[in-house]
Image (cartoon, rainbow, N blue to C red; front, side, top):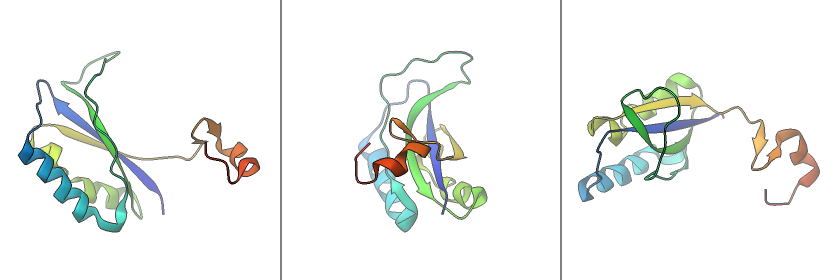
Length: 112
């Protein structure tokens, strides 16, 4: 099953709260078996190029049958209720850590 990245885009000046943390925990619970990696937030950032009005806030990885299913999972993302945005994209497995995917078969068992 493909893996999708949900990129959280926070509005300028966004500050988390205990209520927001509880909403994230509840959303992670609702994702169930589709949750591949809770991800991590981003607090320090720098934007190169055009700023679309939101800033990188973090990411979550989910598995889904297709992009539409992944988007359906993201529609309940707590960032949307906070005035932010989310982007959803299918990951293409070209790299495993610091190694190209073609190199992974020769390093089975190694952590990359």
